[in-house]
Every structure is written in structure tokens, then in C-alpha cells.
Length: 437
Image 1 (cartoon, rainbow, N blue to C red):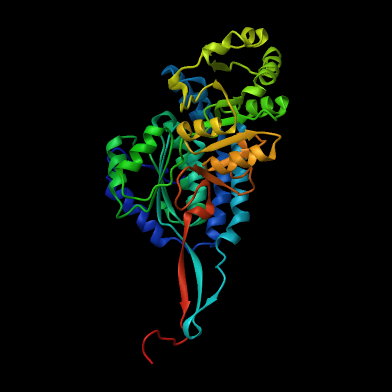
Image 2 (cartoon, helix red, strand yellow):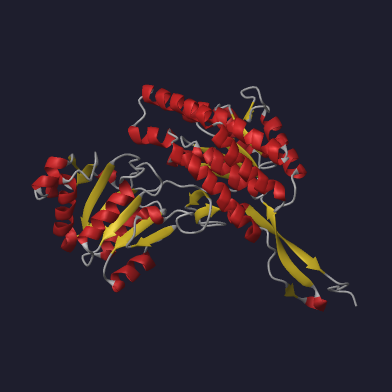
């Protein structure tokens, strides 16, 4: 049994944490070495061997969260199930497929005096991830960061402390089995905010910060550090239903975009329905509600429209008046807002004012309306006639994903393994000089 993967907080000084990470980075094998593949395999196998312990610790976190009054969707973010173990295995296999392409040098270019230059991939360095609730990020963060040659410091929230303690052990064992430096992964057991703030100040030792969580967490990280930040931003996402759309399709996409994981970052928060599509849309929604397909979804609709909604819809689902503060709101719950709009331009204007730049969608049978919407909406992804849930690295065929970035520089959209490498230019001069004869 190896030493636990948890840093011995709260006594651990930040100097020790970052020093351990830098030392591990310097002692790590070069990018693409077989140790990284062995680490991915060892994490998957170790999680399987100790899944009973992981599940027991996770059940305790869920029960503690329930006792603190956390919402059902929030508890779902904490909860681990058997499918997550399968996910870890799939993630390990995906990384194994992606590594050969990741480490391949770029094409050779020739320059002055016959010099030959090419870009060679290198790890970014030390990656600090801060995240709330989801213990899957502990494994995802370690796998994606370490297998791209980076040392990683992982800080989960208090709500997943017990789960992280066991997962930290799994990761520590995997580092030993793969003969990687022990400091390549540190799962911080200290949730003290002073340590968190101090780590954000250490631009001398930390190369990248990735916050995943609430807007307040993301905003704080942006303002409190000089370290480059990849923002796993909040998802105030919209689905625009054009008058040319098939109402059956529109409702099906709406339900898939909202009901599974309503607190997920790609979850739908507001449907924008054309006036010309509203009657047919609400009629189909009422049919699905009467069949029980909307589960416990609560609807928020402009007060003046409530009286005109189908009786079956009002009888089956809680319907509440829509307020101004619902615009731009990420519910993180089984709540869906609906607004009726007058065409593409009004829908786009609403999204520009209130969207978070994460995932926007359109349901339309009109090529002209679709093109206008896609040209004018600025988001990390715009989905046409599909569920917003399609904005996902593995689903898109991009491979393992660490987060979805709403930033503009370095990476936007799925943060896959290639986003955690930089490049060095290797120049073969062959005796060439620039100025002297």
C-alpha cells in the first residue's frame, strides 16, 4: 500500500505543494514515454479494484450533502455510479489512442541558409485544477494532465472530500505502478481557502489554472491570479425554435438538452420559440407532459402566456411566471424558461445579451434562418438541429475532455489532451548564420 494521494493538509505549506509538483515535472519522462500509458491503465485497473471503497466514500459524501440540504441535481453531480467506472476505462483507452498523434512533431519548414525547423510538443508544466462537486474530474484531471506530461494539483470542494480521499490513493498507487514521480498528482485534502488563494498567486511555479464550477468561482480565479486561466465556464444556454422547425423534433431536442444532468454545463436553460411555432410547440410539449416524459420539470413562462397554454401541460407540470431575473440565469436544476420571440434577430439579440458563450442551438428547417443564426451567435459551440449535449469532446470524436472552455485564447470548446501541450521550435542550422558572412 502506498502513501495516500492526499496532500497532508492543512499543515502543508503551499511552498511544499508547488515544490513537489515542480520537482516531479523535472523528473518526469519525456512526453510520449511508455510510463504514461501504464499510468492510464493503472488508474483504470486501480479504480476497479477499489471501487467498493470509492462507492462507500461517495455514498457518505452524498448522505452528508443531503443532510446539508443540497438539491437533487447537485447531489447527482456528487454521486458516482457503476457507469462512471466504465467511463474511467473508456477514458484510459481514449488517451492511449490519442497519445501517438499528440507527440508527433510538426512538419519541417526550411529557411535561411537551408535551416530546417519543426515544432516539437512539450508539456505546459504544472496545472492547478479547482472544481466543485464532480469527483469524476479528479480522475479526468489526473489522466489528461499527467498523460500529456504535466504535473497536476487537484483541489475539489468539501462536498466530495471522502470520495477524493480514496481516489487520491488510487492515483498515488497508479503513479508507483507506472514508475512516474509521486508528485505528478497531488489531490489536496485541505479545502482551506487561504491555501487556494496562495496557490493562485504562485505564477512562479504554476503554469495553468483550470477552474470548473460556479460563475463566482470562475470570476474569482480570473481576477485573483496572473497565471493563464482556461475557463470551464457556466452554461447559460438557449435553444431557438424557428417557425420552420418540426415541433416533434424541437421538443425531443429540448428534453434531451435539459432532463439528463440538469446541472451540467451544456444543459438548456431557456427555449426561445418563434411566435409562428409556439402553438405547435406547446401542443407537443403538452402531449409529452401528459405521458410523464417531462419528469419533475418546472416551467417558467411569461405570465401573459400562461392562460393560453394547453390544459394538459398546466395540469401535468408546475408552471410559474417568468421574471426578468430569469434572463441569463443558470438554474442548475429541473427548471426551464421559455420565451416567445419574433424571429431570428430577436432570438440572437437575447442570446447576445444574456448568454454565457457556452452552447447555443437552433432547430430549423430553413437553411437561410440557420445560416443567419450561426453567423450572428458567438459561442464555443452552436448546435444545429441537435441536442445541446452534443457539445462534448468524446461525443464529437475529439477524445478525452477535461472541461469546456468559454474563453477565446489558446482553447475554446472541449479542452482535450492537445490543449495541455505547448511547442518548442527545434531549428537545425547546419552551420547557417543570419548576419555574418
